[in-house]
Structure formats: structure tokens, C-alpha cells
Image (tube, rainbow, N blue to C red; front, side, top):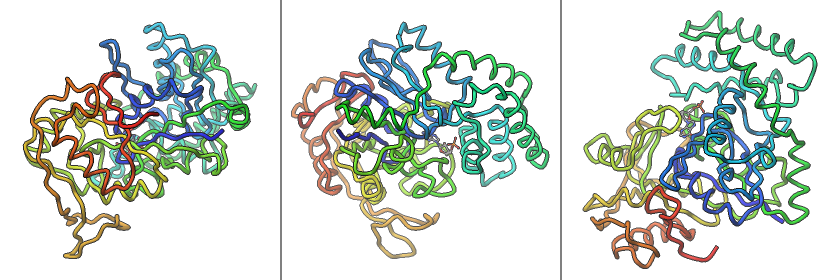
Length: 424
Ligand code: IMP
């Protein structure tokens, strides 16, 4: 059996949570392979909204096993809050949520370091979610980190103390930030109890064994490919590999085990935090997209930057990920526009190109193709064929240019608002 992958092809927030939730019925296991509580996966069903940060989006489907892989970083405090949210929603997870022993722990001082680093950067700050992601991955690479499996060791507290002291000495050369370390440490150690309740697994063996016995696994990406630490808009990126290759190291599966790669893109484009964004709109259209699309961060509440869909950018991430099918989300947000634009080429210093350059310059321009809008609600559509002609044309034009089939079109936040174009 192969492992299928679902991931975002832009700068995150493409609507992965909803699609994972829909696809979940076709799988036995949903596994997260990278990122941490910087992610915010929003799901809406039965009139209620749920936001997940660390826990895979399959948790709301009672038959599914949910695995947090070794490539994920975990903040026990956020994790406990998520578990409490599930308790409140009466979601039973205890016998179907597993965590890799090799996943790294986010300490309170990692969050403190994140904030102090950003402050030190001043105007060139990344716009981090300040969840301690970068410093935790740095400790992983620097071979200083604490892992979930370490919480069982008798000298765990001493290990914690050693790492904390290391952080404090780095912090002494960084600007001061408002942070009650003592209070956060108390919360951190108290939340350990919830973490201990979740079965720890040797996840690489677990995943490979499941594949061998025919279990269907979906690897759920967080953030988006343009935030990948190697291929994204560096340094304005997150600290993990968000592309398909990240599944291999974040779960311990070999590349030949990768099956379908489902790439998600919004019908337009957004970004939160700093960094280049070629199709960003600074005018009223951008404002309308933000308002209509409720484009405010699920984790931080920050307003998202908005722009038209950017095809060179999507072709780049389709290439990097080996995308086999596309899902187009939030197409209903475009209902209000008479004219739609699609970025088809970049112009850099007067030269046209379809490649994402090493560094995206500030003066980058996009050549746009115009499409007619449909200017009507899509709420009544129950099949793709029910969509207005202009919407069908828009989808067909994207599909043709991207060269990958668009198999699903999402017309609203609810579970039910999803049009299939071919059987899955
Ligand atoms: P960090 O991962 O919190 O360090 O943030 C690094 C960059 O990635 C910032 O620009 C964040 O806004 C962005 N980012 C991190 N997680 C997400 C996400 O889940 N959605 C969208 N942007 C994200």
C-alpha cells in the first residue's frame, strides 16, 4: 500500500482541514508529518467551527487513527487545550490518537526565543506565529532538543533545565520581551499529564507496518509549499519541509511509498506574515477578497494579505510536490467580482519569465489574463455541472494551464459544500 499526501500549494491556509475531513472516510489513518501549533486547520460542520493546531484533521471521524509524526513539533500546553476542546465536543480520541516518540517538544523558552529573535530582527522580521517553531527546529538540528520519548526518562527535569539554561544564555544577548516564564513553565509541566495519556509509538515502524498490512494512510501537510524552508520564499518561511519530500523524513517512509499527491489551492491567493507575494493587491479588490474570504489567521487572528491566483507560483509547487490532482477551494469568494484575474507570467526587470526566481524582487510584476466573473451565489450547486458557465470556464482554464486535473471544487466552508469532478 502507498501513502497519499495532501498539502497546500501556496503560503498556507488553503483549506486543507476541510478536505482532509472529507477524504478521511477513504482512509484508516491520518498522519501529520511536519509543523506544529503554527498551523490552524479550520473545520466547519453541524453549524460549529473547530480549529486544530497539532492534532490531525481526521480526529472528527470516529473510525480513524490519527498519528502525530516525528517531523512535528509539539507544545504540550497547546496540545492540552486541543484535547480539552475535543472533550468539550465529546470527541473520543484516547484509543485512536498516537504520537511519535521522536517528535520534538516546544519549551516555553522556545517561544520566548521566537519572540526575542523577531524583536531583534526589527523591520526584517519574518512575521512568525511566535509559537516557538523556529527555535525548536533549530534545537533539533543542533542536537539539543527534547523529544516526546524523553518525558518518560527519570532525568527529564534535568534535561529540561539544561536546555532552558542554554536558552537563557542566548536570551541575554537578545532584546527583552514581555513573557512570564515562571507562569508558562508551571503550565507546561502541568500539561505534561495530558501528553502522557496519549500512547507513544515508534512511528516509523508503526506506519510501515500499517502500509504492509494494507492500511490506507493520508499524510496531512501543514502551512504551504511556499513556506518550505528550502524552496519557499526564504528567509520568510517556516522551519520545516512542507513539500511531499517532508513526508518521507517526517514519518519515516521511503519515497517509493508515496501514492497520490493532492495539492490544494485557493481560487485566489493569500499570505500571512512578511515576505514576497507577487500577486498581492493593495487596493480595494484586495480588501474585498479579505472581507469576503474572512481572511484572518486561524492561529493568530492577523489579517491575511490577498491577491489573485498566481500560476507560475502554482506550477512551481506542483513540480516540487509531484501533484497528481488538484483541489480548488474558496471559489465562492470570487462570487462578488465581475472580472477575475489570473497571473500567468512574471515580468522581472522588463523580462518575462514563468519561473519563480531565487529571490522574488520587490519590482516583480505579473501579466494577468482576464476572465468573466459569474456574480451570483454558488450555494445552490450540488454538482459541478450546476455551476454557472463562467465558473466552469474559470476552473477549466486553470486546469488547462496547470496541467493537473482539478478533482474537487469547494464552494463554502461547510463539509457539504464540495463539488466532485470525478469519483474518488
Ligand atoms: P513560524 O512557522 O511560526 O515561524 O512562521 C513563519 C512564517 O510562516 C510566518 O510568515 C507565518 O505567518 C507563516 N506561517 C506559519 N504557519 C502558518 C500557517 O499555518 N498558515 C499560514 N502561514 C503560516
